[in-house]
Length: 430
Ligand code: NAP
Ligand code: HSE
Image 1 (cartoon, rainbow, N blue to C red):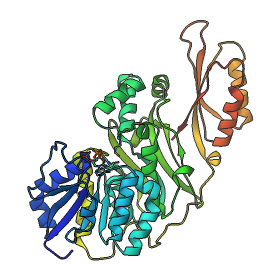
Image 2 (cartoon, rainbow, N blue to C red; image 1 turned 60 degrees about the vertical axis):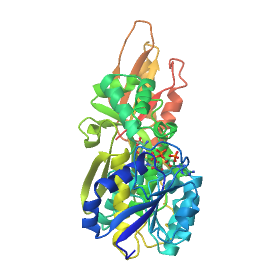
Image 3 (tube, rainbow, N blue to C red; image 1 turned 180 degrees about the vertical axis):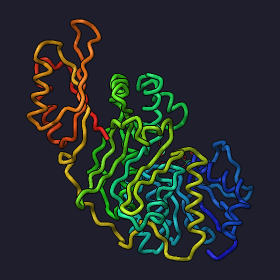
Image 4 (cartoon, helix red, strand yellow; image 1 turned 90 degrees about the vertical axis):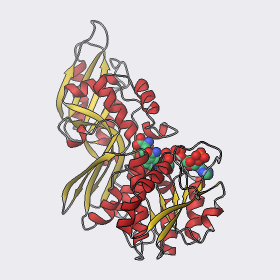
């Protein structure tokens, strides 16, 4: 890439692809000043050539539906994959790397599921496979972990990595609305993935967490070993009660290291209202990490959208255009990262929030407290609210730290009592 023009082959001109093209057009002088070269989107691959577009690349930009026109054009220096999905981009990226072209992608699902094989191929070919936009959109977390904090051992990462889920939890907290109504709003605003299950069931955040774990620990943590709980079952009632106790409920993605073992998962959890992540509202994303040298670092910004995500894609293009040094894809020298040693989820320790819906009669509180005591779970706070005489009442316990297997065993025992009227509700407290 020694020429004065860097030619891009772009697959996908949807939200992110359009954002990228807009920034390249609007900031072209600025880019040239930084790079000493100009960027030119030479060819764009889309699914439908007749679709009306809201961005208009230069008149000589060529549109195609044929992948070979990106792969076999010797002018194209970098292939930018912004199509989404798994099968098509997997094939495109594999073939682009095999054809000797560096790749930029925003595709977290692909990297979480098939990252190891793609990074291995990129290493064999000594090519770049860059992915700043794949986690938290415009927030520069990939470069931060790969370069800026490379000298640190990371003790933990806690992130709000899905804007749709955070928007839903924020609206439910602030406006008292129910889950279904707020999800419809998030879809109307364009925050949600095409399949919103990925957002609300925690899978999109889990994809992003797998990518962050690789960068922070140099280890592969397979998706199917993550604990993943979404927010579709979160009730307004618990959000309001948590608020009374001084907490917010957020969908968190978390990895913690202890004695060489990793625990990682995505779950809705209670955060104290004065916790720095509790203030991250709406569709915004944030990542709080703890390095053994730097201490706590927090990043905050827009996790989605055309320009924020396009900004991250462009940063990767500039990085790959600037240097003839060997690319730094994973941040580690191994061609394939080793598997993480994983702490069994039942051995993790958290504080807990339990809600039981029970018959309001003598001895109920004592029976529940007795089971918690049997399982070595210490109660920190408790509240019972009577809403209507003769109706079931909710009792909420906030506990001190307890092992997950004890919490689960206590819930299994308590739910069998005849006075328990509904399945218990349980959240971690962070
Ligand atoms: P999008 O709006 O749905 O656009 C997808 C684009 O790819 C469209 O232009 C489509 O062509 C093209 N395309 C899809 N499948 C294709 C195929 N098989 N062959 C050729 N072209 C194909 O998607 P997006 O929201 O921009 O997302 C792109 C990627 O960025 C995804 O991996 C997503 O997870 C990731 N990402 C998105 C955001 C965000 O804010 N949207 C943020 C971070 C990461 P047509 O236009 O002809 O249909
Ligand atoms: N659907 C994702 C979100 C988009 O809501 O955060 C960015 O990955």
